[in-house]
Image 1 (cartoon, rainbow, N blue to C red):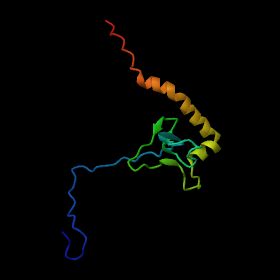
Image 2 (image 1 turned 45 degrees about the vertical axis):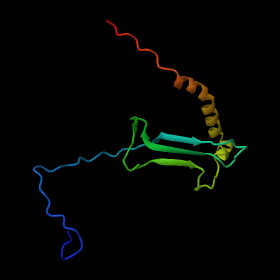
Image 3 (image 1 turned 60 degrees about the vertical axis):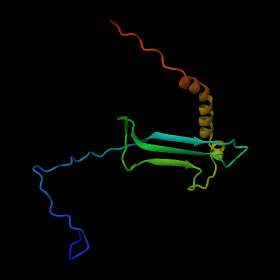
Length: 134
């Protein structure tokens, strides 16, 4: 209900606590690496058929390798993104990235080479557990 003197709502008087609630100070932390949380490659066609098609989106979280700690916050604080196509550098094509960055080409070749083994692993039930030892 608005106060008659101004338009700010009246929140009322605070209710005292029996004991104050104290939020402990957190020590400063340093995250000197990144954790790859998400990699999405969309390649609807080959570079010959559609040279400007496809995209890659990578999401990286702050990571402290010495403590093996990933920083996850509700507001994605410190998260880095790589998106191709990119408006930042004017590059329009995932396939140009594959053609121009040797490490990306090697990575794509490695992913494609891994698909048959991944398919077999994904379609093979896990082994039966060992019977309990009496």
